[in-house]
Image (cartoon, rainbow, N blue to C red; front, side, top):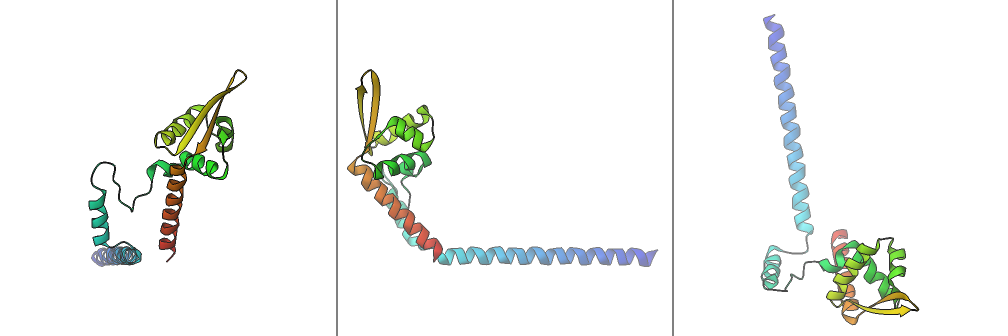
Amino acid sequence: MVISRQSTVQSRQSTVQSRQSTVQSRQSAVQSRQSAAQSRSTVTGRQATVAGREAKGPGKRSPLELDRLIHERLRLGIVSALAVNDRLTFNDLKRLLQTTDGNLSVHARKLEEADYLACDKSFDGRVPRTEYRLTAAGRRALEKYLAHMEAIIRAVRE
């Protein structure tokens, strides 16, 4: 009986040691992944600090940040569609992006307030017609956004 209990205790101690070893090896693997990710990073701590200082103040952003106005899925769709078409009506955009009237109008208004879109309202007989076109500022913002995304993709692949 005593020998049986001793062997059970030894077996449990062995299991605990094995599990501790497994935990240590997993922690080591996580640490090595983290250090590899840090070494792949193209931005040093000093650059991030400088960028953070530049971002302070009203209306200023870090150059490391994405344009949050365009980055939203539906707004990116609107700007992209207008980049390849001179003009699109509200209904064309709604059909193309498969969204609702309310959702499209809210996002289009945000882009219009940022001067990325121009909105022309008219009537076709008695039916209201809203047409959107991309402004020069909107085209520049899209090009800058795409260049930023391409840089991020290149950095990740390296």
